[in-house]
Amino acid sequence: MTRAPDPGNRIQPLADRLLAIAPGAPIAEDLLGWMAGSARFRVFAEAHRDKIWKKLRRATDGEALRDVRAELQAAHLLLADRRIELAFEAYGSGKAGPDFTVTFRSGQRFNLEVTRLRRVPDATGFGRTLLAKLRQLPPSAPNALVVAIDGTTADAVDVAATARSLRSSADANDESFFTDRGFEGRRGFYERYLRLSAVLVWCGGAAGDARAALWTNRSARIPLPERAARACVECLRAD
Image 1 (cartoon, rainbow, N blue to C red):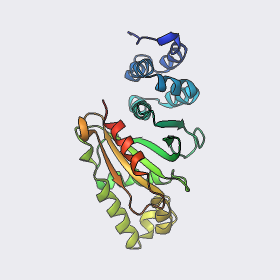
Image 2 (image 1 turned 90 degrees about the vertical axis):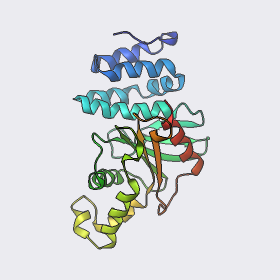
Image 3 (image 1 turned 180 degrees about the horizontal axis):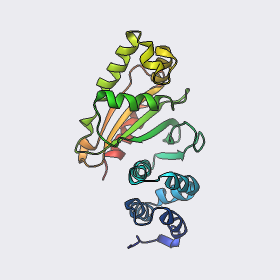
Image 4 (image 1 turned 45 degrees about the vertical axis):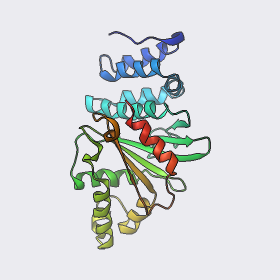
Protein backbone atom coordinates (compact mmCIF):
# COMPACT_ATOMS: atom_id res chain seq x y z
CA MET A 1 0.00 0.00 0.00
CA THR A 2 1.33 3.43 -1.00
CA ARG A 3 0.90 5.88 1.85
CA ALA A 4 0.13 9.55 1.49
CA PRO A 5 2.76 12.11 2.49
CA ASP A 6 2.92 12.67 6.22
CA PRO A 7 3.50 16.35 7.06
CA GLY A 8 5.80 16.53 10.04
CA ASN A 9 5.28 12.81 10.74
CA ARG A 10 2.11 13.74 12.61
CA ILE A 11 -0.39 11.32 11.07
CA GLN A 12 1.73 8.16 11.14
CA PRO A 13 0.81 6.93 14.66
CA LEU A 14 -2.90 7.48 14.01
CA ALA A 15 -2.67 5.94 10.55
CA ASP A 16 -0.90 2.85 11.89
CA ARG A 17 -3.65 2.30 14.45
CA LEU A 18 -6.50 2.78 12.00
CA LEU A 19 -4.90 0.76 9.21
CA ALA A 20 -4.49 -2.17 11.56
CA ILE A 21 -8.29 -2.33 11.86
CA ALA A 22 -9.12 -2.07 8.16
CA PRO A 23 -6.00 -3.24 6.27
CA GLY A 24 -6.38 -2.88 2.53
CA ALA A 25 -9.84 -1.29 2.78
CA PRO A 26 -10.44 1.79 0.61
CA ILE A 27 -11.25 3.82 3.73
CA ALA A 28 -7.63 3.41 4.87
CA GLU A 29 -6.27 5.19 1.78
CA ASP A 30 -9.01 7.80 2.01
CA LEU A 31 -8.19 8.63 5.63
CA LEU A 32 -4.51 8.96 4.84
CA GLY A 33 -5.26 11.27 1.92
CA TRP A 34 -7.69 13.40 3.90
CA MET A 35 -5.30 13.78 6.83
CA ALA A 36 -2.35 14.56 4.59
CA GLY A 37 -4.28 17.06 2.49
CA SER A 38 -6.16 18.93 5.22
CA ALA A 39 -4.54 20.24 8.38
CA ARG A 40 -7.97 20.92 9.88
CA PHE A 41 -9.16 17.36 9.28
CA ARG A 42 -5.87 16.03 10.65
CA VAL A 43 -6.40 17.98 13.88
CA PHE A 44 -9.99 16.68 14.02
CA ALA A 45 -8.83 13.07 13.52
CA GLU A 46 -6.13 13.43 16.18
CA ALA A 47 -8.59 14.93 18.66
CA HIS A 48 -11.13 12.14 18.09
CA ARG A 49 -8.84 9.22 17.28
CA ASP A 50 -10.33 6.97 19.96
CA LYS A 51 -13.89 7.54 18.74
CA ILE A 52 -12.85 6.94 15.12
CA TRP A 53 -10.98 3.79 16.15
CA LYS A 54 -14.07 2.45 17.94
CA LYS A 55 -16.29 3.14 14.94
CA LEU A 56 -13.91 1.34 12.62
CA ARG A 57 -13.54 -1.56 15.02
CA ARG A 58 -17.32 -2.02 15.18
CA ALA A 59 -17.65 -1.94 11.38
CA THR A 60 -17.52 -5.66 10.71
CA ASP A 61 -18.16 -5.69 6.95
CA GLY A 62 -17.67 -3.59 3.83
CA GLU A 63 -21.03 -1.86 4.02
CA ALA A 64 -20.46 -0.84 7.64
CA LEU A 65 -17.03 0.54 6.73
CA ARG A 66 -18.61 2.58 3.95
CA ASP A 67 -21.09 3.96 6.51
CA VAL A 68 -18.18 5.16 8.67
CA ARG A 69 -16.43 6.52 5.60
CA ALA A 70 -19.49 8.68 4.79
CA GLU A 71 -19.38 10.25 8.27
CA LEU A 72 -15.66 11.00 8.07
CA GLN A 73 -15.83 12.27 4.49
CA ALA A 74 -18.61 14.65 5.50
CA ALA A 75 -16.38 15.93 8.32
CA HIS A 76 -13.48 16.34 5.87
CA LEU A 77 -15.62 18.34 3.43
CA LEU A 78 -17.21 20.54 6.10
CA LEU A 79 -13.86 21.39 7.66
CA ALA A 80 -12.71 22.86 4.35
CA ASP A 81 -14.78 25.89 5.37
CA ARG A 82 -12.85 27.73 8.08
CA ARG A 83 -16.08 29.21 9.43
CA ILE A 84 -17.10 25.71 10.53
CA GLU A 85 -15.95 23.94 13.69
CA LEU A 86 -16.96 20.36 14.45
CA ALA A 87 -17.41 18.46 17.69
CA PHE A 88 -17.70 14.69 17.21
CA GLU A 89 -20.37 12.80 19.21
CA ALA A 90 -20.70 15.64 21.70
CA TYR A 91 -23.73 13.91 23.26
CA GLY A 92 -21.63 10.86 24.12
CA SER A 93 -20.02 8.03 22.17
CA GLY A 94 -22.44 5.19 21.50
CA LYS A 95 -25.47 7.20 22.62
CA ALA A 96 -28.47 8.03 20.46
CA GLY A 97 -27.37 11.55 19.59
CA PRO A 98 -26.20 13.32 16.41
CA ASP A 99 -22.77 12.59 14.96
CA PHE A 100 -21.61 16.21 14.92
CA THR A 101 -22.27 19.47 16.69
CA VAL A 102 -21.41 22.30 14.31
CA THR A 103 -20.42 25.81 15.27
CA PHE A 104 -20.69 28.27 12.39
CA ARG A 105 -18.91 31.62 12.48
CA SER A 106 -18.11 31.15 16.18
CA GLY A 107 -21.72 31.69 17.21
CA GLN A 108 -24.42 29.69 15.46
CA ARG A 109 -24.57 26.11 16.74
CA PHE A 110 -26.55 23.17 15.40
CA ASN A 111 -26.48 19.38 15.31
CA LEU A 112 -25.72 17.32 12.23
CA GLU A 113 -26.48 13.61 11.89
CA VAL A 114 -24.99 11.69 8.95
CA THR A 115 -26.54 8.51 7.59
CA ARG A 116 -25.77 6.51 4.46
CA LEU A 117 -28.47 4.78 2.44
CA ARG A 118 -27.15 1.46 1.20
CA ARG A 119 -29.61 1.70 -1.68
CA VAL A 120 -31.79 4.51 -2.98
CA PRO A 121 -35.23 3.68 -1.56
CA ASP A 122 -38.73 4.67 -2.51
CA ALA A 123 -40.60 7.15 -0.33
CA THR A 124 -41.72 4.39 2.04
CA GLY A 125 -38.18 3.09 2.49
CA PHE A 126 -36.75 6.55 3.08
CA GLY A 127 -39.60 7.24 5.48
CA ARG A 128 -38.37 4.40 7.70
CA THR A 129 -34.88 5.91 7.70
CA LEU A 130 -36.19 9.37 8.49
CA LEU A 131 -38.35 8.10 11.36
CA ALA A 132 -35.40 6.24 12.86
CA LYS A 133 -33.24 9.35 12.75
CA LEU A 134 -35.90 11.58 14.29
CA ARG A 135 -35.46 9.66 17.53
CA GLN A 136 -31.84 10.85 17.73
CA LEU A 137 -32.59 14.56 17.57
CA PRO A 138 -32.27 16.51 20.84
CA PRO A 139 -34.46 19.52 21.69
CA SER A 140 -33.36 23.13 22.14
CA ALA A 141 -31.09 23.28 19.07
CA PRO A 142 -31.43 23.18 15.28
CA ASN A 143 -30.96 19.66 13.90
CA ALA A 144 -30.02 18.74 10.34
CA LEU A 145 -29.73 15.32 8.73
CA VAL A 146 -27.20 14.53 5.99
CA VAL A 147 -28.30 11.58 3.85
CA ALA A 148 -25.46 10.11 1.77
CA ILE A 149 -26.52 8.17 -1.33
CA ASP A 150 -24.90 6.54 -4.34
CA GLY A 151 -25.91 7.52 -7.85
CA THR A 152 -25.72 10.54 -10.12
CA THR A 153 -27.97 13.13 -8.49
CA ALA A 154 -29.06 14.15 -5.01
CA ASP A 155 -32.59 14.60 -6.36
CA ALA A 156 -32.97 10.79 -6.33
CA VAL A 157 -34.39 11.13 -2.80
CA ASP A 158 -37.58 13.19 -2.60
CA VAL A 159 -37.50 14.42 0.98
CA ALA A 160 -40.51 16.69 0.55
CA ALA A 161 -42.72 13.81 -0.65
CA THR A 162 -41.61 11.61 2.25
CA ALA A 163 -42.32 14.36 4.78
CA ARG A 164 -45.79 14.93 3.30
CA SER A 165 -46.54 11.21 3.49
CA LEU A 166 -45.55 10.99 7.14
CA ARG A 167 -47.52 14.07 8.06
CA SER A 168 -50.56 12.71 6.21
CA SER A 169 -50.41 9.58 8.37
CA ALA A 170 -50.27 11.77 11.47
CA ASP A 171 -53.10 14.02 10.29
CA ALA A 172 -55.20 10.91 9.63
CA ASN A 173 -54.79 9.88 13.29
CA ASP A 174 -52.99 6.67 12.30
CA GLU A 175 -51.69 5.99 15.81
CA SER A 176 -50.61 2.41 15.12
CA PHE A 177 -48.38 3.53 12.23
CA PHE A 178 -46.25 5.49 14.69
CA THR A 179 -46.47 3.23 17.74
CA ASP A 180 -45.27 0.33 15.58
CA ARG A 181 -42.21 2.45 14.77
CA GLY A 182 -41.26 3.35 18.31
CA PHE A 183 -43.13 6.63 18.81
CA GLU A 184 -45.78 7.47 21.39
CA GLY A 185 -48.40 7.81 18.70
CA ARG A 186 -48.71 10.73 16.34
CA ARG A 187 -48.04 13.26 19.09
CA GLY A 188 -44.70 11.59 19.73
CA PHE A 189 -43.95 11.78 16.01
CA TYR A 190 -44.78 15.47 15.81
CA GLU A 191 -42.67 16.21 18.89
CA ARG A 192 -39.65 14.72 17.09
CA TYR A 193 -40.54 15.98 13.61
CA LEU A 194 -40.61 19.56 14.85
CA ARG A 195 -37.01 19.12 16.02
CA LEU A 196 -35.85 18.44 12.44
CA SER A 197 -34.70 21.67 10.83
CA ALA A 198 -33.39 20.42 7.48
CA VAL A 199 -32.28 17.44 5.40
CA LEU A 200 -29.30 17.58 3.08
CA VAL A 201 -29.14 14.81 0.47
CA TRP A 202 -25.54 14.24 -0.61
CA CYS A 203 -24.57 12.21 -3.68
CA GLY A 204 -20.83 11.71 -3.94
CA GLY A 205 -21.04 10.30 -7.46
CA ALA A 206 -22.62 13.46 -8.89
CA ALA A 207 -20.96 16.67 -10.02
CA GLY A 208 -21.55 20.32 -9.18
CA ASP A 209 -24.94 21.32 -7.81
CA ALA A 210 -26.30 17.78 -8.27
CA ARG A 211 -24.01 16.56 -5.47
CA ALA A 212 -26.14 18.06 -2.69
CA ALA A 213 -29.71 19.25 -2.25
CA LEU A 214 -31.33 20.98 0.70
CA TRP A 215 -34.84 20.47 2.08
CA THR A 216 -35.96 22.82 4.86
CA ASN A 217 -38.63 21.89 7.38
CA ARG A 218 -40.79 25.00 7.57
CA SER A 219 -42.54 23.55 10.62
CA ALA A 220 -39.36 23.21 12.66
CA ARG A 221 -39.41 24.88 16.07
CA ILE A 222 -35.82 26.05 15.59
CA PRO A 223 -34.81 26.66 11.97
CA LEU A 224 -31.33 26.02 10.66
CA PRO A 225 -29.69 29.42 10.05
CA GLU A 226 -29.81 30.16 6.33
CA ARG A 227 -26.13 31.04 5.94
CA ALA A 228 -25.06 27.96 7.86
CA ALA A 229 -27.28 25.74 5.70
CA ARG A 230 -25.90 27.30 2.54
CA ALA A 231 -22.33 26.81 3.75
CA CYS A 232 -22.95 23.11 4.43
CA VAL A 233 -24.48 22.59 1.00
CA GLU A 234 -21.51 24.25 -0.70
CA CYS A 235 -19.08 22.08 1.29
CA LEU A 236 -20.89 18.89 0.31
CA ARG A 237 -20.90 19.95 -3.35
CA ALA A 238 -17.12 20.28 -3.40
CA ASP A 239 -14.91 17.57 -4.92
